[in-house]
Image (cartoon, rainbow, N blue to C red; front, side, top):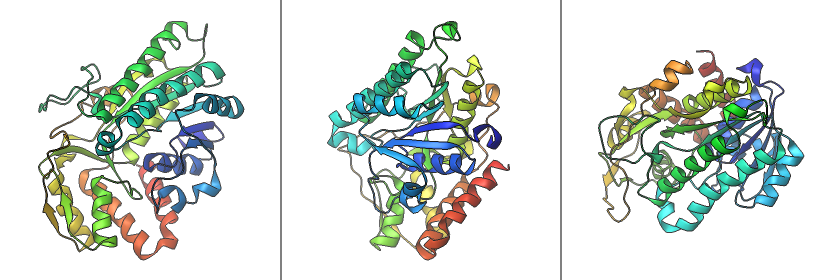
Length: 356
């Protein structure tokens, strides 16, 4: 993986976000030539600034909904590989501003795909959506890539629409039957679950809520839905999946085209309340209380079937739940107690992961 990405020209949309910053850090450590398109970081602190990515990579601060600007950046930078992560990614925020959510996630994805089509330089593109694209029937059975798409809340619906748009571009413009004849681009869609890790300070997400309650506000952690079951996974696991896909596409493996689930093993699927209890134990402080909010619907049960990624990509989740929790909250403890060493810890976690 390290040798493959070295010196590759890579464009990441949403590189100032949580997953985008982790991906940028990995690829820079691997020696890639990385550029980004994103809005400025939405939180302070942010992982993007904490890792010094604002000084170490070129970022065009641009709204993903602005096609002309996005297209000009593609024409100028001429990336070989694209990771599209830019999105309005918070379920609860999608209720407050549904139009922004739909335009960012759906139209924004179309803008990126159209820029890829027009520039003609991209060999490999990974469009990141979410596990929430599936029509959630609150079933105990995990969802596989061929299951029906849907979406109750505006966030889920907008990402399902982005998924459909990406599949349309694959069929209409990046069809494998025309590869090497009418185009030289292969595209995949990646769907991942609830991702945790150090450096996330987004609003209305569980881990950042825990951190703010303990370190900033010194108050109880508020749980809206303590018995909700989520497929928790450390951020490095799905990012490795995205990178595996990008490598396969670049190497002209047409079997990598299409949709892929990247989720944890089933023992990592636990309740919100259990995660909070483990976090409090690791941090050595904190308490929680339950304040139900039924005004904004959120799924109670959602899990992913990862058999396709395991069998066809040889991708495996490498970090179990306990290790995910320890890595995540060790990162925050280091940040709040010894911020000067946080880049070294981040790189250590990356190197340990990719040495497995």
